[in-house]
Length: 359
Image (cartoon, rainbow, N blue to C red; front, side, top):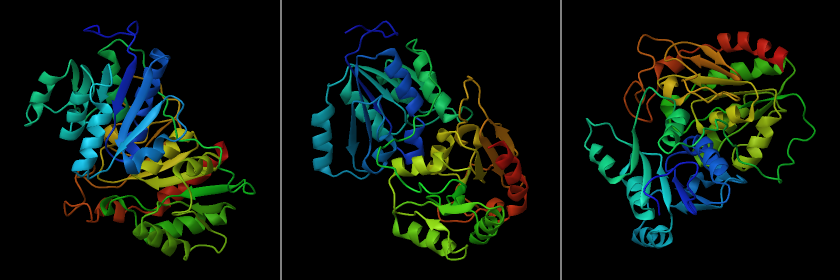
């Protein structure tokens, strides 16, 4: 095995480790696609948490999706170690955490990784990898991943690859609908129920059928069902009813998608349709949806204010503290964020006709 890598190298087996949430997994697909283009004959596997594997369904760049529980037991560790131990020539670690780092260390002799900043306790990890980039809050996550390719001279591909399925014959009779995704994983990223209802009725007045999406968690289904009950009777509630790949197909055929800071908003962005993204505390430089067709090595969004780049219409809650990049006003995941609670639907309502006129 060569001690260096470039596009001319021929690693037989490559592993990409992406162990965070659904949106994070989707944001690794440009890296994965770049590796597939550079090494078309190599085996390319991806290691993710079990509950995020659906984001990679139907991805033709990947040979195998390896999964592990979010909270593994000893037997899970044992089985995974047996599966990956020195099975790869090249590994990419896209998170700075201890578990992804350990898995990368075990999997391959040549490791390319995102490492913690030098002022943290984990900065020493850089001594155990052959190539590294320091985690950067001021670089979009997609570009942070693609920066790893520069370390081994691999050309970049910027496109996100949404999940795909041929079992997505849904809503075939609908041609004029908008998808609303009201429920992010954490409360501090939520807009208000009242605002969603007001916006939904406005979209209905424009002649749009309403389609609500949501995940399978009971609290999410209850939340979306409550909103659906306050909207027109013909509102379609898909919460907990479809796979991610099926939802991607539904979104791709919509006139418009509106959602908060959550993985499904990243998914909607990847389909290319107009997306209104409602953000509060989160830093858009790092975590805004990546615009469809964006091909530049610079951040698509700045830190402050409403912005539009390609198909993404980024709407930010108001406040001098925004974005604080913290977990809500009470600093925990189940707290509220005043910047979102006070975000009026009026601005979004003024934006919608402009988007529909372009679609």
